[in-house]
Image 1 (cartoon, rainbow, N blue to C red):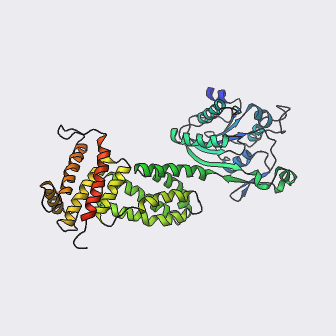
Image 2 (image 1 turned 45 degrees about the horizontal axis):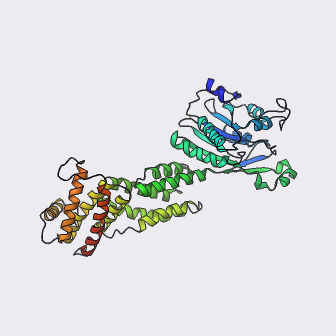
Image 3 (image 1 turned 90 degrees about the vertical axis):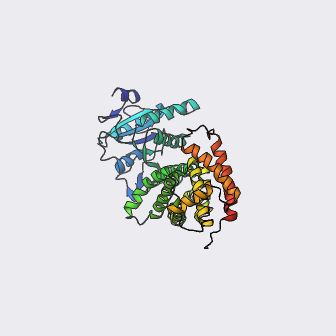
Length: 438
């Protein structure tokens, strides 16, 4: 309780376990004399008129909260005097019953506290606000954030903080809310409106945080080839939708996520026989995923990024596909996989064009092809044989961890060489890759 007393001079509830894994409703309080109004969210209206939006949010989300959960209000010295305190506590207060007393009268078991923050008039004060919000959020917290009464740059700062703590403290942002009084008209119109008609909609801004998550996840995927974050973000956000519709909505996006994840895992483990089918699955699942996201227009360009990358891949046969995957490995810094896949692609080329067979997984075919390549068989073009020997040199070095005196290469060489080998292979194999039975 000592730590709590330092950040707040008002608490209600036992505030058990400051480092708990509970839920927190965070809100800002300004100095404005707020209009009394009803609030609505998802066809639900607050039971009574509220002076503060926090009353409605508590009614909608916090009634059954226990003392492991917290309601935290960030306020300045001035907003505390104007809106937290009641007139009996401060003659200059805006209301007979301030927010502090209002929350106390709600009969909640949750801990209620306020944290004083500066006005945010300069960069130092903004950093102080950033730190105070961050400190109020613990590891693994589940957060609901109300930004209705945040002032000046605070809405932007709030989004930055939330993305910061999601990474730093593994925080789950459940909801971000904004009470849109302006949706009722001008302040003059609202003032003249009967209280029963002042029904303020509460907007859910969480999809904007989700958009940021998707942007980072897709960017990471296209730069590293690792679909783990796409899967984590996508599946977590799809769970409610899939449960609500029993899988009827969200299935297309789920199929795309699964396909991207499968492709990622198979490239990282060099599962060559699956590359073509994975790319085809991604291409087939993209249109349905786009359709499911068409109401969320900002998501479309993100999906288009994936579409443009995979639609450019030529998968007409396993040799051409292997060259495409080698290039994918190069782009995503999967160098060891790139050398391995390029080597096996040349083996596939030899089976298809020299041995004139389509049975690429047949052990005898692969053994015979490698023997022909290693012995520099006359049927194989010299330029391909030369390329094969150079690839083997680098591939063996990287696969054996550099523990060789004869073919040791600097770590700086591999990327450049894979690019060079990939370009040479693409040109050479394209000229001669024509299976006889086509």
